[in-house]
Image 1 (cartoon, one colour):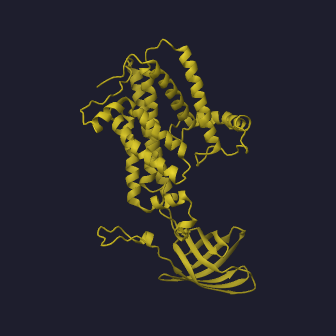
Image 2 (cartoon, helix red, strand yellow):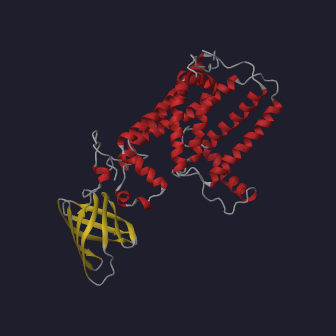
Image 3 (cartoon, one colour):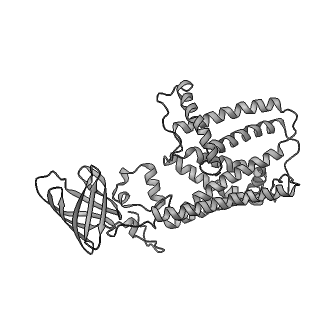
Length: 415
């Protein structure tokens, strides 16, 4: 085991001060649900930041539009970029003041250890949460019916990426396991191997976010930087090992000596409580999400996308001819006609063989149609407003989800 030098150079101390400031502030302002207690602290700082950052945008950056959207699922809002700019400038100011006031200290070994602990747990716990939702395909769900009837050209770059990644259960499992291996960061002796694996994982995430216009670029970039930060003590040794073939001994940061027995107990209790809380909360969320909107969520008894073969209207209404009928969940579906796609509340009574339609433009009116199913054929009959309808449909097949893995392919099947 090797330790960090007792005498740091001026440049090392200066760089550390800035790194400490910007890493700490980033983890504080971009907690991203990682440290549970930060949520309550964040509620207090948001009350200030939600006023200060819009003022900064208007009076300092002179933005052409007011900031009214704050941190949300995007992660890359104007507000977020101004917060990032703010903490960068604040880090420079604190570094300069710190350097003026603290000139006699020989090293920051103890502080260096604790900031690495914070970074390790920030990256590790965040990726464990991301890994759990990938294992059961919650982050990248299988393509739904609406996605399957859309063309490639109608997809956004992010939507295309989500379809590609969500298609494969196996690849989701692979990605999930890779991110769960970030748990190696939570233990001091496996930090280096954990940081190497996690660096590859987060670099891939960052690349997808950059090149498919996925709006989590700030956090994904920060994760890559943090992994590199954790590898700094062993960067030269890893270079010698991988590029020169020279034997090496990895450097492990020594934990500060805690003499008091109760403090040691408190340290390990807090550590394993935090890990346990993350796992329990993450698994609970995954189970709940799997049952509510994942693959375990209930589907319509007539689940599928149906192409309209015949559409007859008896009446004087201006009802548009349907092209497609989507039946997704027991209470949700959609209709596509010449005006595009419309989400509709659709419930099915399998006992009475009736379907009930409620349209967004008339939420207080229920329309009932009798149905009959024969194989892939669906027949609807009944009244919609004052018109009598007779609709014949055929369930669509999608090769994307019907084709299975083939170990033997005489020719590439690339349609």
